[in-house]
Amino acid sequence: MAIAPGEIVQLKSGSPALTVVAVEGEKVEVVWFSEEAGEFRSQSLPLVALDELEVEEFELDEDDEDEDEEEEADKD
Image 1: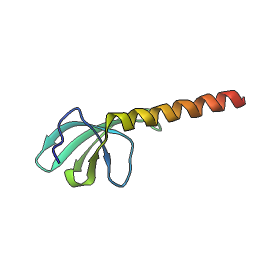
Image 2: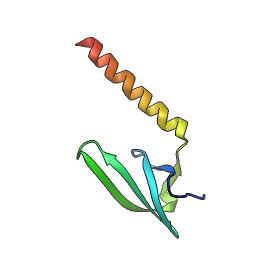
Image 3: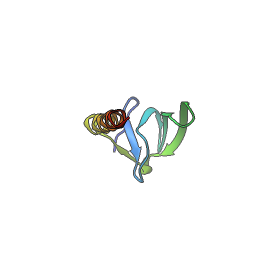
């Protein structure tokens, strides 16, 4: 699996969408925004623990969240 900076990945066990910022051998440096902490986080992860995400998959997840927020607003 070839991963390059700028690609969106996810842990095979599940995680938020992670953006690749660097690849050094079998280590991948990623960054993501933590809603809970309200700040960006970064981590170096092993390449074998990651799956590439299709941009369409990521966009669908965001659309689902938008629909959930709209439904909650309609209930109020």
